[in-house]
Structure formats: structure tokens, C-alpha cells
Length: 581
Image (cartoon, rainbow, N blue to C red; front, side, top):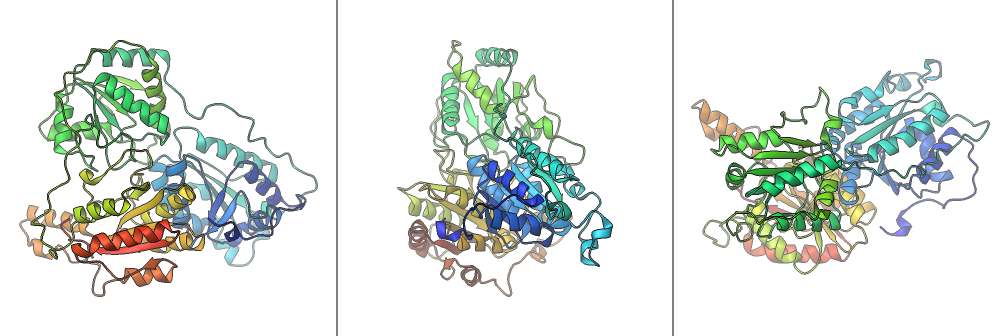
């Protein structure tokens, strides 16, 4: 991001005179680099303070076109950095706009400080009409079931305390969004004296809890007895040293590793101990490994119960002793079923999975080699029809051409669509792939891509998002923010002109009921007219050319797009893919 793109006259010597000035000062001390927002009158006082008191620096305002995009941008940023961004949402209406993205971030366990606002709580201060419909008695209740903490303080001093507390809570594992609602009257209240600004740098406690000695010893004992150990690697961190420790631990025990596409890269996909390409759902070959293993170590795996059940349904019931390390239980409630089924485990370790890996890797326990047969690296990419030029572009064609265009320089695959085959994922670094969005909400991809681009700006690693056409069209105006702040980004739209995942569901339903499958496209097609993705992207400041619909043209089109993005441009490529790919 270019320095001149941060509007504002710079931080001066303005005194803290208003309630919102004190709040802006606290946000500055939190080391929050950005605050994504859609302008709204309910936090006009804070807006003024961020710009005219704080000089639009730390946090810098990022203008967005929809509250859902603002939250998705913070989500993508956190996926890369592990750090919270701030988001400002206008009143109850802005929070309702943002709610789907908040749910995604909650399910994905990322930190985020959401600052809301409301019209005057004191009814005597409300303007006619607008302040009444933009004021709620308990605004945080809108997202309370899928956020970690919320508050609506009643004084400036209490607001400062709530913001400081929220900042601490969202960073503590397991992370999730927090929400503080600021009465517009508090923001605009003149200060008679300077309130105490909380010292947010005082607490030096670790943000994650490690396993206790008994849990480490029990895990070491079970792994030491294993002959066919299997690791399920799920929601884990982006730290390179933790990545190396996972590899070291798997190699020490000769444990086979399963990962999935819902989460980011956690283990080298080409490693011999990672024999099955990752999937969104459990691949048959992975089910076979689960049935054969005698000890399974689950590290942040999403839906252990469902995975074991899926393996059994595939003819491979688990007989292994199962260790599950996760802190997820701290966020479970009776509203959201993202807690999944009761885990069928022999040892539960309520700790940060990366910290358990560190403890295990630091152990000097003697280990016997596993008895898994020798294996090569993960499976080869899928064969693709007859390979005839002009026969249509498959998702594998797209993946293959993209890998070729990106070869030789680091990139970050921010997202992939549902049709992406795990065998086409090449991950050798924790930032090679970021995973999905947690809550499986369509429309999150564009905003998360922008957030990842923000976090990666200046790193030398190019953010690339492969998005379905439905996902892109639902959230597409989010990309304007990338263009506005000159964030290099490549978006590839895998365009099958339909909500094809639902076509498959309708075909299945029709077959079950012995009805025509040929009607499954009705209500699912994105055609007649076909959206002009390139024109849409150009109108939002992206470089884009016409649609690519022939596989022979794909390598050169993607190579040109990558070159343009690496030169600092925002680029979109629309690729017509076969609906069955």
C-alpha cells in the first residue's frame, strides 16, 4: 500500500477533548494498523477522532462498500498474520449486514475487534425517525451466539475498559470476533478531564495455553506404543517453526498425515508421509488409513466425530486409540452446531495444538519406527478427459496452468472453489494456502482475498484467489477496496455459469424420487444474461480482459495476469470451466 493512499494530514498535537478522542488514542496504543469500515453516522464522533485527532494512522481507515466485506477483509488479514484487525459497523443495520461474515470468522476461529455504535440510548436525545430505527436495546444480541464477547458500555471510562478487554479477549486462544457497541452520545461527549487510558501493553501473558505435563506424558506413551500412527492436522498456525516441528514429529514416529482443504496449509503436501491429497470431505483413501491406524493424534481437526463416522460409513471403522488436542470447547454453546458431534476419544488435551507439538518435539523419548508400508508422495493430479484442445476447461486445467504461471516466485493461494481437487494443491510453506472461510458462507471469497492482500502487501508473496462465479458475484464489490489502496492481487474466477454445487444436490434428490434430473438446472443457472465479469472488475479498478474459454489460451492468459499482478496491479481473469469439473 502506497503511503500517499492513507488520507489525512498526519498526527498532530491535538488534545484529547472528546470521548471519541480517548477511544481513538486507545486504539492507537493497541497497535491496530487498520480499521475497515463503511461510513455511518452512529460512529461519526469516532470517525472524526480517528482522522483529525489520530491523523488516520494506526489504525488507518480502509473504506469498504459493504459491512460484510469489511469483516471478510479483517478475516483474510487474520488468516495471514494471526493478528486482529479492527472493523467499524454502523448501528444495528450495519451489524445485520456484517453478520454472515462474523459467523464465518467465528467458525474459523480468527481474532477481530468489531466496533459498533448505536443511536442515543437516551431516548430524549434521539433525532426524529432515523435515530429510533437505528437504536436497539441489546444490539450485541444480534451476534452474541457467534462471537466471543460483547459489551455496550454506558460511560467513556467504561468504553475504554471494554475496548481494552475486548482486544485482550479476541487474541486469547481460541480466538473469535469480539464486539463493543459505543453509544453515539459517549463518542460526542466533551471531556471535563482526561480519562485514564488503559495500559494495553502491560499484560505479557501468553495468548495460548499449552498442555500440562500429564497430558504430554500420556500422549507420548500412546504414540510410543503405536505401530501405525496417524496424524489428523486441522486448524493450526502459520508459524514456520511450528510447521517444521510438525514435519519433525511425523518423521520421528513415521506417522502418516491427513490434512484437508477447509483449513490452511499445515504440512507439505508432497511429503511421503502425506499420502492422500486433502479434500473438503474425507477421501476414500484417507478413510482407509483411519480404519488401519492403531493411534490417531488429532491436532485441531475440524469435526473429529464426523470424520470417524464417515470412515466407518466407507467400510473402515476406527479401532485406534484417539488423542484429540483442541481448545475449541471454550467457545461451544447451544446455538451454533459448529461444535460437531461428541468426539470418540481416549485422551482429550484442552490446549493449543501447536504447543502440544512443541512439547512432543522437545521430548527425548526413544521411538520405534512405524510399521506403515513405504509410500511415495501424495497422489498425482487427476487425469483429465481426452486432453483435446478446445474440449473445454476443467478445474485441473485451470490449476495446472496457474501452477505454471506462478512457478519460480512465492504466492499465497487464498481460496479455492468447491470443485478444486486436493491433488492440485502444492503446499510447502504455511502461507502457500489459507483454507476456506469457516462458516461456508457464499460471498466471503472476494473480501477475504482483499484482506490477505493487505496482510501480504510488501512481502513479495503474491495473493491469488480462485473463486467460484457465485461467490465472486455475491461479494464482488469488495475488490474495489484492493484497487483503492493499490494492493497487488490476482483473482481467478472459475466460472461455470451456475450454482453447480446445488445442481448436484437437485440431481441427487430427483434420482431418489425417480424424477427427471434434467430439470436440476432450474433456479441454479447464472446465465441469460451472462454476467460480464471483466467489465464488472474494470469498473471497480481492476485490470481484466475478456473471458478465457479455451484451454490452449489459458497458460498465456494466466502468465500475463501473474506478471501484471507482480508489477503491482489488481487483476481478474474470468475462466469458463466445465460444470462437471
